[in-house]
Image (cartoon, rainbow, N blue to C red; front, side, top):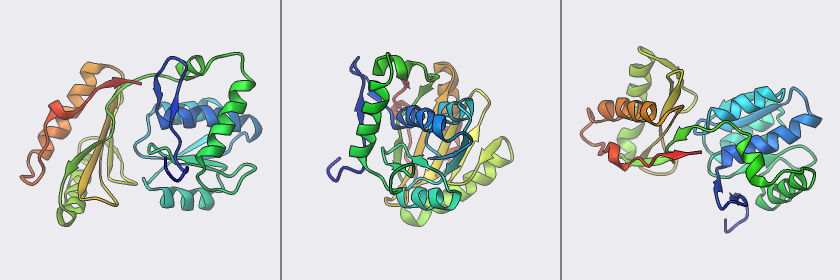
Length: 228
């Protein structure tokens, strides 16, 4: 982006490489030199990311969205790597612990130069799920935190919930997230599942509940589904 602290990657097949998948690739490389290290990532990231971190001997740590929050958590945990879906990536191994897209790009070039595989082939090694991009639903600053608080309580009574930042509701074969934006009067949602049909079911669970709040205007048709 304009100030070069967020990175975006297109592979050799013309596909956008989402930041959580890029973080998995970089984590895999870093863990070769730092076995058992922690990797910090935000609540919007794919379930494929913690699975890959564990697979390669690391410790996944899910945390709140927000580059300042992630950077602070990285320092607190002594982690050599952190990142979030927005493209911010923080490097503590042989670097200064802040987000730098130029450094991230150079690191990726080095990883590719040491492999006999293309970028697309490396990306395709990471488990793929059906998901939605981040969806932002208008909700006033006065209401958004109370609504999320209510939803955390509601979902905890019915499902397993990670509540470090809103409610990331775990369904076994997928998950859904609702959180209050730190910077805008919106609720932020994201969903992921193993099948497209299950993804639609999880979306509908959230839509049905959010429709109970008159100030929240939400439509399941607004959710774009992608295979990542």
